[in-house]
Amino acid sequence: MSLTTSTAARILRGQRKGLPGEDTDLVWDTFPAVALAKTYNIDVQTGESSACATALLCGVKARYETLGIDAGGRFNNCASTINTKVTSLIDWAHAAGKWSGIVTTSRVTHATPAALYAHSPSRFWEDDSRVPPTVRRDCKDIALQLLENEPGRSIKVILGGGRRHFLPTITMDPEHPDKEGKRLDGRNLAEDWLRDKKKRRQRAQYIYSRDQLAKVDPLTTDYLLGLFEYSHMDFNVDRDVVHEDETSKTKKESDPSLAAMTRKALSILLKNEKGFFLFIEGGRIDHGHHNNNPYRALDETLEMETALLAALELVNPAETLVVVTADHGQVMTFGGLSTPRGHPILGADSVISDVDDLGYTTILYGTGPGHSEPRTLPSSGTKFIAKHDVVHAAAVPKMWSTHGGEDVPVYALGPMATILFAGVVEQSYIPHAIAYAACLAHQSHRCITNNTTERKVTQNCSQPEVTQGSIAEETRNDETRKRNIIVASSVMSDERIRSSAQDFKSFVIYIYHINVLSLCLMTNYLSKG
Image (tube, rainbow, N blue to C red; front, side):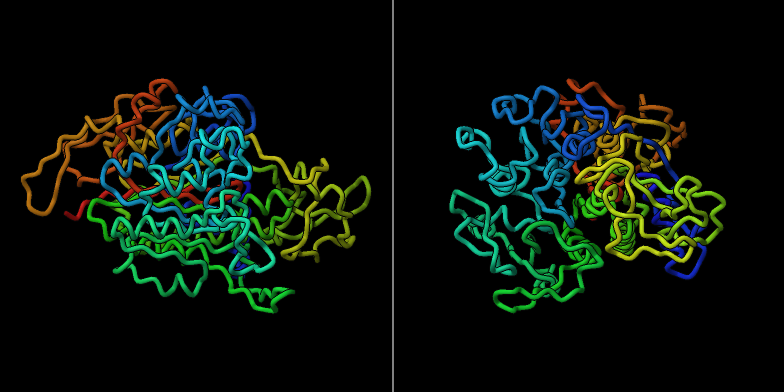
């Protein structure tokens, strides 16, 4: 998440409790390790989601709007993906025998989660209708890769939105009877996913409602696919609003919360004695900002915090590395002149403009639809508090606000967090730091496994050789660590990363969309076997 989003959400959290808010802490504010990550892409100054996600989840900087391929890939060029595919944290987790999961409030085929399992010259190729007909045989769409290719085919839990990319045009959506699927190949990928799991004698379920999620028994379910919306899932403030279809007059059930999906995912993944990898994304924070709607963006940030707190209740922090960060920032800003403590963060400044004598909100945007909205604030300013549909002012008119190009914070908690996360680092460093911490992939040689114990498999991990940026120096005594420990590696050149990333071992990842996207990487350390 951007610092601005995190700070504003922190204040809102406190003010919802009747406090001034400025001295309130979000859960990641209490983490002992903090760093900054550079979010530029190979070819652009201000980072874009899919390219940033490739850096963040695959350890390789990428080009604008490409997905899961290195700098040799070109946008919309299918042929350029042949020799440019890169492996991801989920690949590395599977190689170590860990189970994996994706939980998001965006479409599961959207730019950020898709970087974990797909390789595409365009983030927009979410179904075959978006892929040029001449290359459909050579470049599968993103949803089809999730169904048929590794590592997508082996992901245990997939929860989010985006049913339209799994349903054919001849099939109407189960919750929106006026909408049909997008696929042109006639396939129902949700049914095909379930059929594939049954064929392999796996215990699997496909669901699309909150009630169905609540009824899933984790003890009898090893694979779970939940697609809860036609496109993105509802904003939290809209989840409990009764939806009524104009044609059928049937009420649409509310979507599950991010926290509910997180709990269900962990209840399944925790069954694996070798550990797990979980990616959790609060994907709608970004969308709130793009609409110059800070109420929804900040509310979604607090929902992400709730999901993280739910996860921390189920895992042992001593055995889990948690990293909270963002793929890129946004152009939201907030400030004021002599604004008193405890002033509503969603309100107006305590003074009016000395140019046009009009009030203005504490939160403003650099670009976006708010430029065309009239400033209707009362002259007193201080009595105004924005509701969930209010669009805040922007300096430059655009249909959607742009991203921010500033560094994003990285907060870390857990084993080796203070050693590996400090200073200013490249975004592509983050997964390699995790690899070092866990002795995974290109860092697996650092650990010597001792299989002589009956219940605990221990490892001796070497000390870091090089760390990116000004990483804190800490001394470690010789110690045995449980099998799924996460140890971080030094950052490498893109070419070396590509060649060495094939052996990545396992761990858990957790992503949250905070500003544009707040990411929480969660790596399970403990082997119970």
